[in-house]
Image (cartoon, rainbow, N blue to C red; front, side, top):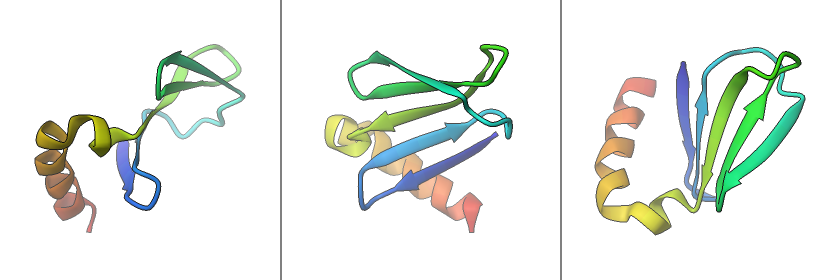
Length: 69
């Protein structure tokens, strides 16, 4: 699993599998789930991540940046 955050567009992506996504579904506002050819979840994208959850997300993102470096 890999977690990335793009601060330019305020999007968090959780990569669950390296398989290619062939379909995506917005399961709720600003939450998109990517599926492979067998309908397995390969990733989850959260748009407007910090904007909606600033107090909860910012500390976690700082920890992710430390681990990703």
